[in-house]
Length: 533
Image (cartoon, rainbow, N blue to C red; front, side, top):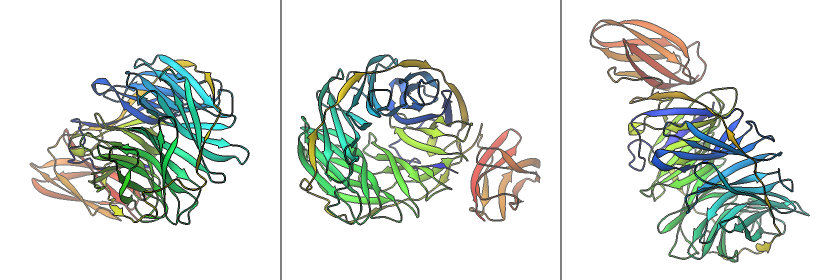
């Protein structure tokens, strides 16, 4: 089972939370994967991803505008005869949207794919940018005079990976294109941010000048023309890579993955560097976050009050691979932990920091993968399957944390890029439905708050006790629901005025996450428990 881990919600002022929690899903007619979200007006949001619905090729990129209930207002698909993906999107300074991804509908096996559109979904321009090798667009950032596309390219003859950066004007016209890498190592650029005099770009390098791992985390400063100014390479005995850069007022946070430090296997790390008005950051601290198994990061953003939301995946919590969200303060301390999920494959990819909702995808509610939107309610409650989880940040000592010089054999090389106008835009359809909603206690469906009860022990093994208080003699229905909300066991109890205890055998149930539902007349309440055998 794959769940979400939602940390740092309850009682944290960083999140502006609505009164009621809900989870919604949207299907565009095929397998749908939402990758990134951008806040819109009046609580709406725009999401970018990929879908197999009615595309000319295997996948098309799509952009959807969602209302405040997570339902699609409109959807546009973009692509050609090949396979086209949308991976990242920004709201541009001129009030439009720009997404980047990759496409093999163009001239070569894979090209960087970029589409600029207005907030009604109308295409303003669409281009592919490709070398004579395979090129992948992973992020886009707006600079002072245009846009920078960030990604990777597989260059001949060794077919090694290099980081590739493509700078374009506001109309998509090519300004410069460079690769960054070493002669024998593999490099990828995952993210970039604008600085005072250029950009900071981050990813990984296989130069392996430090530690004993194959890859080290690297970030490097560029001037506005793509010239290399400085680079920082850090790591340990395992592998590191930086996936996301989060800019702050006087600092920049690098968020990535490490196999050198932490609890076990792979952990998420956050490294804080102080920025003193220039392009060369100064190291402050490095912390890891994880459990007994593996964690990875999908996104990270800063809230209005300076706290950082990190989304990712974990196999340390719940059962199987689970989604992960952390809320960190400026010192890297984790605030609180909750998880939520169903029996399918549920993945959280990003957070909308405006009205706070989490987007991703799930195959747990239909035969296909659907877009999923999770909205927390008052006090951090969740409509479906919420539970506590614990992750703490551990300070680590890293090798060559900075300041640093440009590593030997790491160089910038101009590369020829062919620009081609390319896009087929179609208006897509969607089917939206509410997975569950609630208000107050974690629940499925409508909830009132006039039944108080407890469930113990939790985790449970062979039996659970459900203790509740009744104000009069009555019949109370106690049910156990599985992770999808289906009833798997029920007991009718004749309750007396005062305290009541119902003991329920769990021998016929397998390990997993369950809900206890108690109903008295029209009143219903729910509590979660974990069954371990």
